[in-house]
Image (tube, rainbow, N blue to C red; front, top):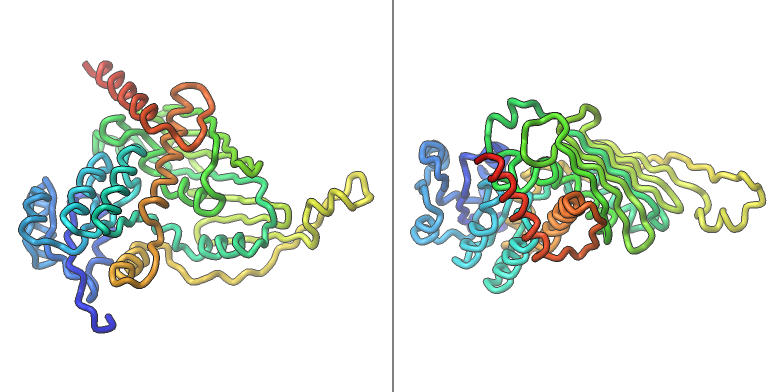
Length: 370
């Protein structure tokens, strides 16, 4: 720990399913859990006993009583913004689960609160630390793909009816602000933005195919970047297939990514030069697979906590700060907006227009219930 005192951390939302992924990373010598919070008092009491700390049902009471240096926000994402803002205002650094909020207006308020309080706002986007993602980012930065031309993301998280029945807020406009785009997809959307940049225009078709939920269980979209890059996205809980497959093609090479795996296919000549200079009418550049050792990285929560604690001690930038965490949220909002209106949506997204759309979707869903 380099002689530094442990960071005093409060955890809000210990009754959430995602807490079990965070718990191992909280049991470390450079972290002292000083409080846990959950509206489910039994869950809070259980975890408080494990950490040897007090438990609270109300986060404001916890902030007043313990004054933590940092807070981890794991509650359902409609509560992310108010919880994070209260913690930041109270002087705590914040690590918030994905998605950082339900809509970009909330994310902007969180970013502004962090700036005003001079505190860190980190978003738990641990997939950025996967070995193949870190390697892909390096290869792209080194120019090994040339000019990126296309991006293709397919991500399938098959879920059964029993999954949605476990928590009635899942797949609802009020409880999640969307379906697959707001629950399962944030990491995949983030990887698209992280490696290729945020798209500038989207067209989406969201559908609820098999699940009895209010929001989408499947989204198919076309993406466009200002540099003439084109892409496609398919995410679903109502299909079967690969958990995640990402392909990024450029004028010099192609990357194919899956969990724990990276393939690089590289040409000897940039496509732009080949098309101009080759005398064969049907000529085709030859791509050769290269042996690329992967950079270190586990893609786990431990890596995010390593980074968060180091950043609190002034040791470098966050893996994903508020501005970076906002990218995939804005993309998800834009996909919902496009499907709802039936029109292409340009980014930056108009936050007021999206707030109106979300309010309309929530009103219609409530009307159907009553």
